[in-house]
Length: 227
Length: 227
DNA sequence: CATAACGCTAAACAGTTGTTCAATAAATGT
DNA sequence: ACATTTATTGAACAACTGTTTAGCGTTATG
Image 1 (cartoon, protein in one colour):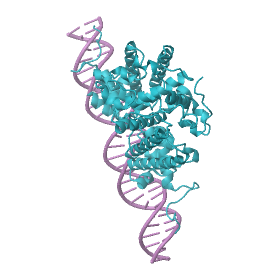
Image 2 (cartoon, chains in turn cyan, orange, yellow, purple):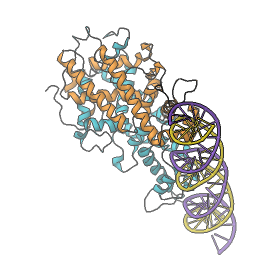
Image 3 (cartoon, chains in turn blue, cyan, purple, yellow):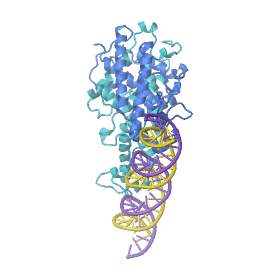
Image 4 (cartoon, each protein chain N blue to C red):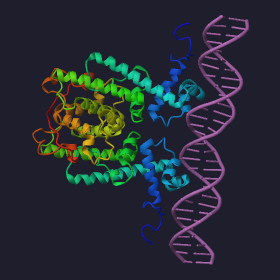
């Protein structure tokens, strides 16, 4: 009669179907999709293995449901954060602090498996970033670029890549991008050199003409500094 | 009697043991470690599944051997490339062009699984990069940093992250970092905005004080532009 | 030539995988 | 109250997993 006429609920408020999906996201995020068995998901959700398949059709379908949900959550967070002005970091603010499944960790794990849902979400992320950066250029905050879209794409890839390699970044610098970010100084070891490079740059312009920039060493044609 | 008294060889010059390892690297790189079965490796190497285990002890040991080999190859390429002067790109030049197994692709796949061998290699990569960048600062080519080591680490993570996310980068920009790089213009869509950002920066210094930089929006304390 | 060692395989092992099926328990609609 | 769907389970399936064991054929050595 009410909105949740179907779906049994245990002591937890979430329905069984959602509990299974959240358990799957958690395990997929931790060990990867291939290394996670349906049975392990069932145990984590407190449910029979057969129910996992019965609810979602197959393990692959469950994975797709996880992808769709994660993309959806991050989209929401993104549009929430947009009110407080444009943000150069394309990955939305920490979601799991609110009690939900580890969405960021899931993204970090499954970015290389390349699902259509996650890929589409990344495309949107980059489009948004490109739009905001165009605004920034117009308002004089950002410098113009010879390749505005590609610049936004590379910047987004760098941010996402740092998220994917969070384990190495933490070992190297101590900054854990997947930690609950109530304390911003916890990732200062990442953000400080990052902002430093993106504002001041790393190459001295004056000396840039006598020595080639990194990738150009490998034989690229000249790259004019300004259009 | 001669150096290779043991080890049978097929029409291919490589010994069976090496053929197995190369097949494993190729399949691990393509589908990931967990999703690759010992039998699939055996078929690819033209060998019985039992031999794969017999030679390496276990699948995990084989994986370790792959990690060790890949780290070794990349170390060699790195020291080769060092003769032509320091390079800001920490990932050594294309190896599989020489006919060997897809080392770069393997690295891109297994960077998130975190083996001790690969992690150690990354640490060395960053140490090298930090050293070279310190040289660059001394020679006036590079700007000094408030956090020289962290800057090298973040730069390396960005490069490696772009490699890991090569599939998305290619979809977004058309630049395929895993393609055989005989033609440098194939990755120009990545290198051009990248060098642009790292030389000119993206934020206008003049306006940088009235509006916060990306990560600082989330509540970090002030970050002095120069020490 | 006999004997040992080696590279390699076929067959089988026990365990796990995703999935199916029939049956039970619970909730819903009438 | 009954009938009907729905939620959930336990057991079983066939296929696949990494690994083991015994033995083959070849090669080298005594």
